[in-house]
Image 1 (spheres, rainbow, N blue to C red):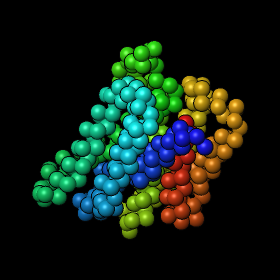
Image 2: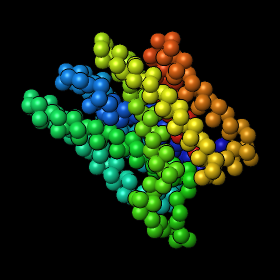
Image 3: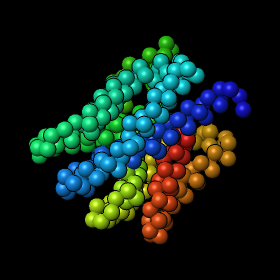
Image 4: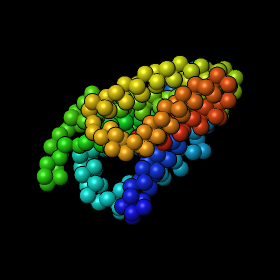
Length: 271
């Protein structure tokens, strides 16, 4: 394997690990106002992600560092064309971190509702925007001969980009709900598992639409038809997605979570 291919594989692997590990944090943060009916339950939900959320973001820093070190031109184009989206993601991640730390400083209901809203916004925004960004990377970012991007954030919010955002959000919601099912007990666990079962069908529909849109909007399948072995990625990804539902029926939550993690990893390598 050539050095360039090795770096490219490592780059994809770091992004995949980041989405796999921080994905359930995004999912839990998005579900916080909906599954957590009482303050005690919301605290339990945050505790489920508490030991991991800040460490998970190390993978994001590593992915950015590898991009800069191994593919400086890609780094320049990527961070200039996706500047608005990436700045919004950065702001949202900072907001989420501050909210998690500040939420418990006071006991007032209004105080905690404010920070719960910030946690929600700081979770749903990166989930959607990362999907938008990667969908546009799959599609191809329009740049001129000088490598300059002349569009705006709204240019990135095309139909395919929005579909990518919905795919990532759906993945992370299922991923987060399954993690809650593993880490919690009682009514909260029951609601989390029930949500994962229902949300899986939404994820399935969005995933099918994304695969069809990818054929129409991108040139990715040209490589797949040129190298048919690549279809193994799609087959394994679909199998992992179906595995989530299979293990949910078997009531093996950790296996279902493992299937959702594999689905996320293979989704990154799909492109």
